[in-house]
Length: 493
Image (spheres, rainbow, N blue to C red):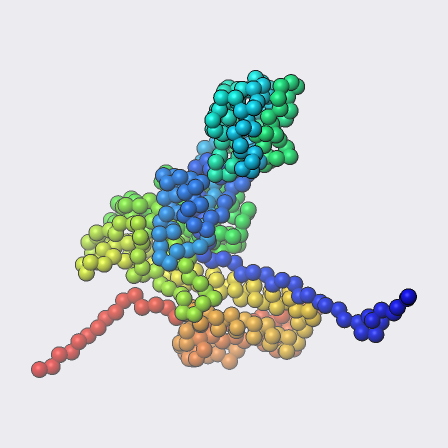
């Protein structure tokens, strides 16, 4: 029997708003090193704990040593990336597909006595034949037999962490190439058994020439916006390398911070102005900070670890780095002259005091700005920008180009400024900046912030036709932090 649709009488539609854009993570560190664990195509790998780093790098690699300091902080940070620097020319690599537990059963291999496959390395096809796996007892033994057949062309290893076989060319540089493995003309085909075919393996990674540190940093910046802090896990980088990276971090459009540890004792000498801390200060970099440490070449990773535990969406969560600890870093024993030299060069240090305590001081960037203020304002900029974008993006109707519409934008901005008050970045205080709107210089900001937008009627016609909002200005008063105290005790008899 034919019926009429209920929608002819009652028509209901469900409209889903777009999923809002996420704010950026300002607690993510990138450790950049030259260990051949992450290949130059993958380039960057994410971790959530030190255990993952140990599984990949072991416990002696520079990347591990830096990560250990990062994760030794209390509370612990959450997000870490490790990136690859092709400090020396790299070799071509073929990573086989991950084998299941069933596929790893050694009986699958011991049954083969005439194994064979083809693979092209450095432009030359290699036919591997007569591979007898009947006597192997584990997958390392399988890889050893393949390596023997590869001869001088390359090597094969079993990567237990990723449950795969990997074939590496014996050559390096741009001419080092490799292909997928394929079936041979004769013999028992083992290319699929090893997971090295085009349908199972990862894309082949060809070798590259050695690159400068700056080239690695720019490549990783282009690949991922997920990381905010940068720590280089290498003790042989030069002052020129540091300055080049600092210049890039300063000028790149995506806000980031670079930390560098110096072990040069000249940093402690107030008469020396050619050390790296002095050069960074002279360049007035606000996005690079240095630390002197005679015990650890990666001490700045500990500073990152402490700073990156801040949750800006919480209540009273912001910190100052001064007075904080550096687990795993030996505190310096300095005299007053040496400590003053570091302070004058805006170089941080973890230092002993005569009351059996040790603290980080002063928690500053190379230009003297406080780390926590640069970190916090980077978060605030992104938080406000994302909130306003989401207002425009997720609204099911337009934000009108009227005073009422602009007020919705101002309200959204003020909501995020209020969060800056909640987390302790911003606080009530006297505004000593320039006057604008109804805000006068010297006026007390009772909320810690003030926002102003002129009437839409004052807009230039060209701006209105371009659908621009009037310029919205905000004033905020930073909460700051107490680093020094003078106390006077008056005594009367």
